[in-house]
Length: 297
Image 1 (tube, rainbow, N blue to C red):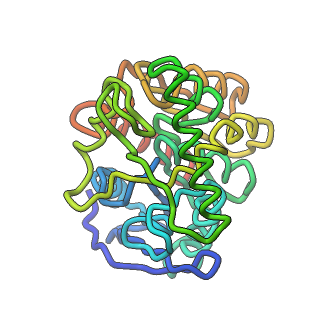
Image 2: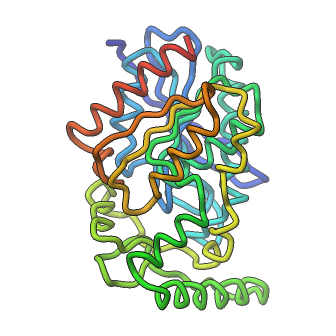
């Protein structure tokens, strides 16, 4: 195992400062992995063990916060915009390629949950990416929206839509945003309130803000990384949690099968949040390290 040090980095995305941790291994060969979290997550919410393991195995790692979240700038706080997050991914990749010691031809992406869909989108649009790993990915927003109806009822979807419309209207008027919780117990009002959604808070730090702007829910159903499968030219690892209550696993399996040999599919008897901790994390990490060993080395 290689030793590593972690240093702070900054880069700009459309004029806004994003902040990242750069894990620098002693025995690096130039390969790098760019990482970011899922829905409302920050770099210190359960991702450090993944980044550390990659660095111990000789990879540079750029683990960043999206603008409006965590250590990054951006007002209003907790603003979740799919378009802005995709731009932040592009900026993070460009930043990684600019750093001394990193081979710009050997950049891998690592995403989880909502960002699992992001890395598939970025990889489909940028053939110079060397590889992408998508853990428990949200690849079909329509399927995710229908999943909310399945476990919470149509009334929940209507309430979420009402909040989203109010938030979007206030944004157009230059007013403060309307927010709601990212996660809550089953039966409560939040973006995620399946039977195991509160497990999210098991990996979040004490200062994590459990809220997000509601307007994103107007665009969720139309965000479908699965539609990009025909453009994928780079190797992708899809890790489907078959007990996933948040990001429907059948959509991830469908994407992998449509992509054929371009996508390596792993299926696990896990829930959406199990994969971040304990033995389940070790299983996922072993597959990720094997995948990046084949594609970045």
